[in-house]
Image (cartoon, rainbow, N blue to C red; front, side, top):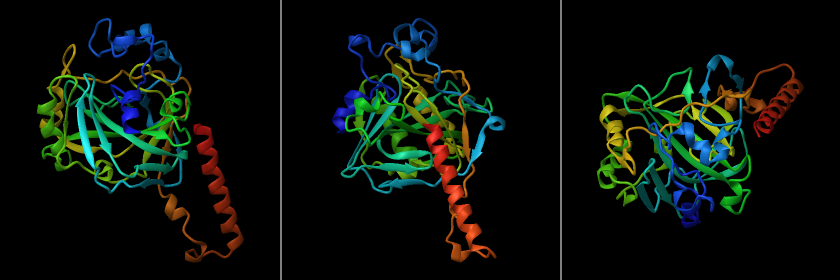
Length: 321
């Protein structure tokens, strides 16, 4: 399955090949010129779609909801092997497991299985993330890519509006190195040139890469952020950033692409086009504790409130898709 995914998901780990593009299917870049994001739609028509990513998330315009907890499976397991690759557009990590890493719950109706993760960064510490929060850019963003288990073929998932989920994590700069990312950063010198790969001797768990809190997040429907920009992604952007040092982020900027130094690789924000953006306020577990633990004069009232809450959460999930 992972071998097949490598053929299906390339570059930022999300795009699928198109026979019409042939050897030039990866012909896009981020610097000014014919390959920059403003020209992607010339070759990849779907990059001019209505519901594109990334976006600027304005907190005063989001709809606050209380969704069920996100559920993770197998995230505390070390992979059997971890391959890190400079594909000329980003740094991609493929983690191989004997049992798949899965996510469900929250706004997700089916379960999704982990495929790979990759990074986006900017030329300096003042910008680099793809999604913005209140027009604020973080220096780096991590994307974890999951595909819908309802579809046996991952190519089919790329044709469905609920085909993929991407967990997005922002980074902010701190003085101290983040030891969780040390092995990744140390390996970058071995993949300086595009199409170079190496194995991580130890690897890491998915849990270690997640923010401390996974309850608070923004979620919306959007697209891949690289060509062909297919609108098949449910985005989950965690609110609380992760800490990295300046030197750790700077190491990514030293990599090379096929067009020069890979100093940045973020697509500019796209129009929201009337899409709803939801913010999960958290606390679902405390609102759904067993009735026996609550004190209330009307048990019937509590039961009805639970039913209303669960129906509301289900309605939100359906609206997101």
